Image (cartoon, rainbow, N blue to C red; front, side, top):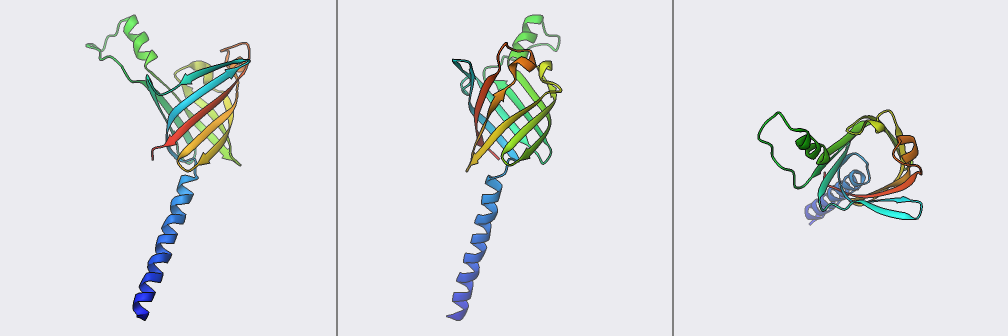
Length: 165
């Protein structure tokens, strides 16, 4: 009886340790995230900039770098490596991304963008508040459209991601 009790106690302690380790993994920013919904508010206007219907976007965080890639879901295949100008437009419209280093402390993420398919972002740092609850991450904050040369007024971006790894 004493051996059975010891085995049950040890099993409970080990499973408790695994649960604790799993929780710390789900609370971390590191990993792979799939964008589900993104909205941008500019003044009184609210735009859905991503809803997952015609594009997929994955964001990856390592211990020091981030990268994201967005891809159209209905991309055509080409029959030559020498693309026409029209085909290049279609290819660009269906793929984009950025990468760089980041800092993350007290739920504040600052992305330091080093490379981007849109050159306006290169050399720019953008700060967001991060909330992680289980396998859902919310990223939100002021979006510097004026600094990026993409608008006459800054916006407010809110994005919701699901952890995929």
